Image 1: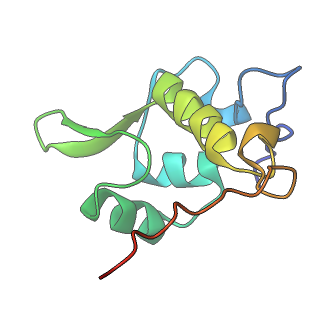
Image 2: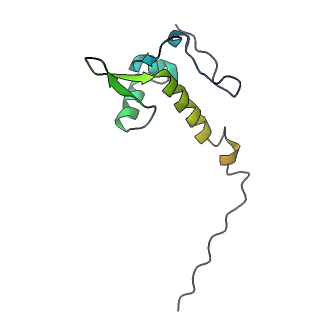
Image 3: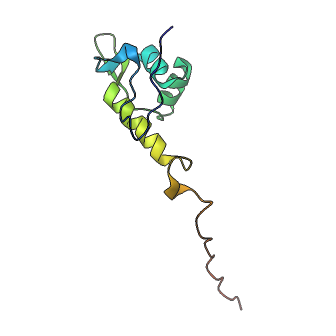
Length: 105
């Protein structure tokens, strides 16, 4: 069983699974392990054009992911989450006023 490094934080800019050190590209199975999801989820995300960027590489056209693109995608997900980005948290935001409705005659 492989061991995963801790979840990325401000002090650890790169999230590296120990089996991916020194590798620039990952296949679907390794990418799923790297992200902590199932390969089926990764295929669904690719079909829906969600998830990390991927491309086909090699004679058989296997789906491949760049490790640096995975790290960038993880950071983007953290920034888009209101729990990790206080600027997006609606709890501390001032209430927005609705525009006045025009009077109907």
